[in-house]
Amino acid sequence: MTTVHIELPDTTALAASAAGLLTPQALERLLNEALRKREVANSLLSIAGQVAAAGIAPMSMEEINAEVKAARAERGPLN
Image (spheres, rainbow, N blue to C red):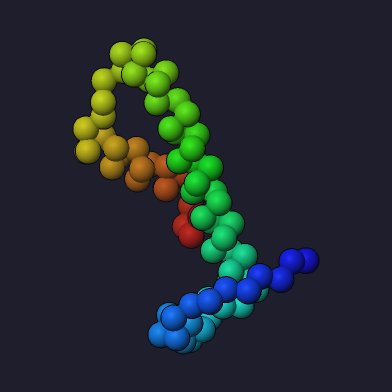
């Protein structure tokens, strides 16, 4: 187990504490979610060149929103 020391502005620390976000469990969830999002973003960026080289047309905002909605529905609530 690793101990981490962070410094936050008092108002941020008070609000985070009141919201239950400064517990080890909450911080672990927040960090794991941030790491997962970073991994997904890096994965997408790593194939951007391949997509461009393949001549795949960009998606419209409506198409993107539909894909996001479908992916969220597939994952289920709160995932």
